[in-house]
Image (cartoon, rainbow, N blue to C red; front, top):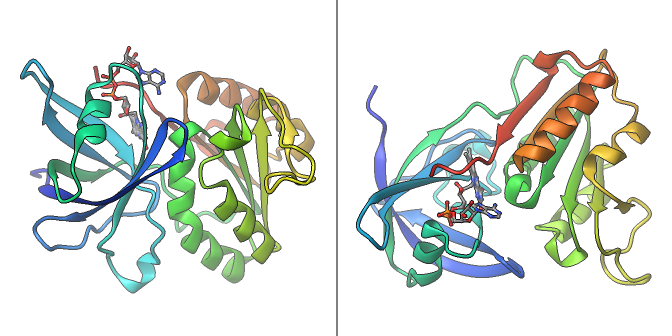
Length: 254
Ligand SMILES: Cc1cc2nc3c(=O)[nH]c(=O)nc-3n(C[C@H](O)[C@H](O)[C@H](O)COP(=O)(O)OP(=O)(O)OC[C@H]3O[C@@H](n4cnc5c(N)ncnc54)[C@H](O)[C@@H]3O)c2cc1C
């Protein structure tokens, strides 16, 4: 089957961490983008030397897909020095367009899942699929009482992407727990990020206190490949069977 290509038009851009931009697009052809939370798109462009390039970005849009396809296409892009896509997105004017394709990927919540708990783990922009899953998680928590723990890894409080949104979601939903894991700098006492569920260290170090349970847990791992591998090994060590550990590694297309 031919892969659908469409233009994406930039409508807004804001920095959500010192080197991460939240970008909002709509399809330039006026169509909605139909996808499942957890999927990603690819953008296609020419590098400075004219060579063709493509890069993948997880969809971050919060949209209730039970209501049909949505129009907003939101992604979080980590700017890396010398990055080809970084230059593209940094230099793109509001109203500018880029060729895109998708959606792709199977890093999604599955309708047949009958687990007691989801362990959702991400570092850096690897947290974005879980933002897109929030409306569906809300439905699943209500309908089948599944519990959800979100483990977000970052170095500093300023790098906790969408941290305020996840904290607010946890405050509003008893079945959802949000554990930010900070490796370098903890929030000041009394600051907005300070909370009893903040942990010091890497996400894989916070797993033991959650007592991963082969009988009831399904885990999702997304982002930095080293983190994904470390958590995969840790979860296997807790007895989780491989089909209950779903992974999305943010490897470069270069
Ligand atoms: C399925 C999938 C989903 C992805 N989703 C996202 C997403 O939602 N958001 C996102 O930002 N990225 C995501 N990525 C990674 C993304 O596709 C690009 O690899 C990334 O944006 C870098 O592209 P670039 O062209 O700016 O840099 P490149 O031109 O690819 O690299 C420039 C230099 O930066 C280094 N570099 C590349 N990435 C990083 C990094 N993360 N940290 C430090 N150095 C790096 C490279 O090794 C190279 O030296 C995803 C990847 C996959 C496979």
